[in-house]
Amino acid sequence: MSTSPGRSGERRRSRERALEILYEAECKDLAFDEVLSDLGVTPAPYAVRIVTGVERELGRIDDLLDRHASGWPVERMPAVDRSLLRIACYELLCEDVPVAVVIDEAVELAKNYSTEDSGRYVNGVLSAVAAVVRKGPAVPESAPPAAES
Image (tube, rainbow, N blue to C red; front, side, top):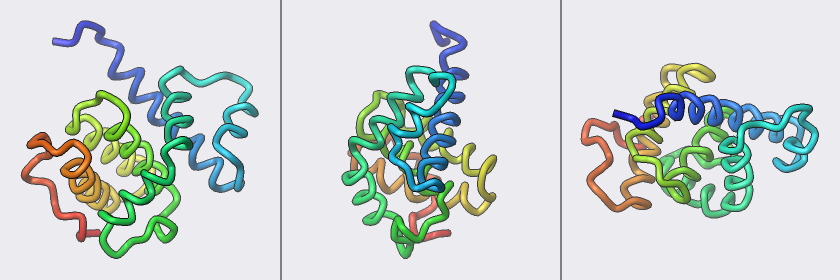
């Protein structure tokens, strides 16, 4: 049982807001922090932490994605998928969020903002990344391989 029932909902909204910010920055060819500073309302602290963390770790994140997204270099991925994969990779690298939660949240974002196929692809890529980054058995055995798209 969670000690703070609203926490997962707040984090979900923060991930969604971070996705919007990263996507906007890419579409407008702006720096992530520039989009953050132009917002009329400051996002929740976790959304800001994700966006600034993705910006700080972008090279490392994109390298992981390039190595584990078989056949899809980062620059060829759809912008929404690329942004949400970056968010999830940041959480796997720098946050203490369980692997299953990171993957589930990213898959749900993919289903809501991209396609059903994107959900499966995101699941496979993140499972492969998590196996390397977290080096543990927390990756679901039923996850499809990263080569599926």
